[in-house]
Length: 445
Ligand code: 2IT
Image (cartoon, rainbow, N blue to C red; front, side):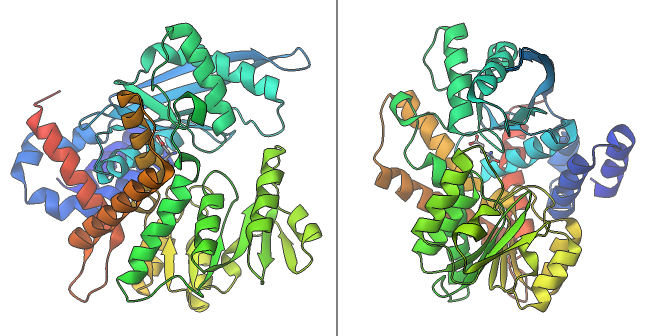
């Protein structure tokens, strides 16, 4: 395989899909050497098959808003690869959603899911509908219209969607209710369900918790710990709050949160009361953060800015793709950052990653760091299939184990001669090898 040639072919075909090309580029660059040591991969055209989704569904979603006006959105499901298990991955509801973003997310999901060691393939879906500013009734009608189109293409052994940006417990509830009505089956077809109807304890906080457990391992590798470290976090959605809570619990000081309106710098650090305030603000349908500074006068709100200009030991992007660019990386490095871990998917641009690696900053990519979310979805699937519920300690214990084994896989495949751990390379190689071998064993399909 020549990574450059494959990328050139994809650029010709999908030149406008920049996030998808970015994600493919990163993986191919990492695995090229290992791939070329396996002529059987080349013979079976593993990489050409892997970069193209198995299939993509696109559908119109029509619904009526509270004013009685008809609204039209586009829905998608990308079934990317099911070599090691049913397609698995979230649904994103946000006005920025397009096919490039969902293909990048679906592609990343293949390797992330492989890293969890659980039997899950890669998929992703969503819509250009944004729940922000919509009433609960509007969201319900949208979810029902969306599921009317999607339901016959998913199933507990076929494709199991979950949440992502804009899809939390409320949306999963509406989607599940409508699936159940259409399929006449109460089955584990979605994850992130409510606790009384098949959901798993720890799933809501799992992405953030898992991310912080991964960071603990990165620190341990250098004989360090989280205690006393200052941490900047971006966002305050499904992912950031779990990260903020766990990092705080383990003795770190989280000094930023952010939203579409700007960021908050709180030099005294988040605590339980502040996290509860942010969760309430979110539950009211707001993802802005400015009210935090009104409530807690020791903090400052910076309108329209991102938190990467703050001097910290650890930076954790938790919001969305490409939210930390080369310039941000330079600022963090100049301010002496020692560890950056993406909890968002592809949170850093290629320029930012290159800058961190050049400066030997301990850096790890989303597909390893945030895999605890989908791993706990996998644990929810196991509980559903066995018709039982595990206690929180059992789920959390398994999550710990999984994050530790992902970290070890990254070290095994990414440790360089000088001792620097290239987690990007490690994660990509470990995830890829598992999927490639499964594809090879299953023949040309
Ligand atoms: O990006 C992700 O891994 C998720 N949004 C979670 C996917 C899942 O199926 O739990």
